[in-house]
Amino acid sequence: MMEEQTDMYNQDDGWVACSPDTVDMNAEALAGLARLTGFFNPFLLLLVSLFVATESAAMNASNESRSGAFRPVQSTAEAKTQLAGWIIPGSPISDSVRNLASQGFTCQTTMPLSPDAQLSVVCSYLIPPPPPPQQRLVTPITPVTWIVTLNSKDGTTTGDFKVVRSPKGIGE
Image (cartoon, rainbow, N blue to C red; front, side, top):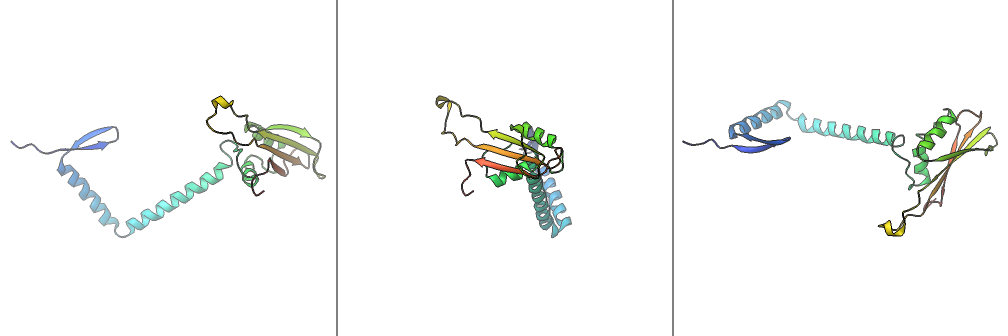
C-alpha cells in the first residue's frame, strides 16, 4: 500500500499537513485569479502600494508634531514645526501653556516682551541631567535649554510664539 505524500506548511500559529493535490489546487486558483485580472494586476498593485505609502507618510508627518514627546535634540526650525502642533494661534493661551507643560516645559507669565502684546508667557525646557559616570555607557550630549515665548495681543488668546535654543545648533 502506497501512502500519499504530505508536506507541512506553516499557517499562522502552527503547521498544517497538506497533500500535493491541495497545493496544486491553490496554485491553480492563484493562477486563475492572475489571468482574470490580466495586465493591470502588477500596475494596480504598484499604484495601491504607492498610494498607501504616500498616505501613511503624510499622516505620520502631520501627526508627528501633535503626537509624541518633545524632541530636545533638533534644530530650532524643527522644534518650531513640532511646537506649532501644540501652540495654535487664536486658541486660548491657557491651552498652549497646558500643552507645553504636558511636554515637560515650565511656564511663567512675564511682563510683555513685545510692544504690541498685553501678555507674554515664557516656557523653558531643560534636558534632564545625565546619570552619574558609573551608570553611563556613553558620553552625555551637551545640555540644551529651550525657551518658548508666547505672546498675546488681547491677554487671552495665543498670538505668535518665538523659539530659542541654547546653545545654538550647528549652522544656526
